[in-house]
Image (cartoon, rainbow, N blue to C red; front, side, top):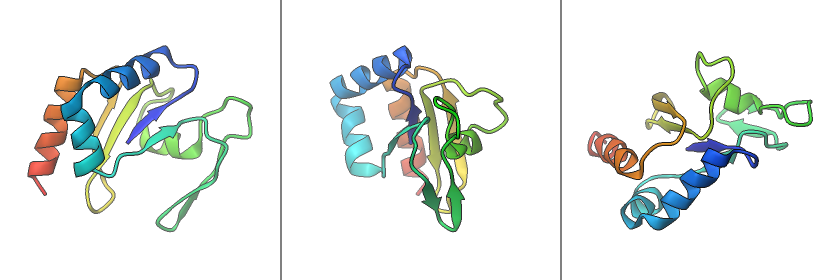
Length: 113
């Protein structure tokens, strides 16, 4: 899962890198359940039995973005979060990630399944 915002320059850079890299696109589209979530979404999300609400503030962070950001008080975007089959977070990285590095991380977790 990639968490991003509409105003984040690094998120836009990350998206451009992803669109240009065939290997990473194949990994994300064919081997994983990939979601790019707006961290300021105004939608209510239900994950399993838990409801996550949007921020009541105009540009506030969604409850889900805060929940998966871990100990970060103010998460940095883009943020990559990988869940295992039990919906536990097994990887979290904030900031721009090189596609080569992201591909290696994905391959590592995919080989563990």
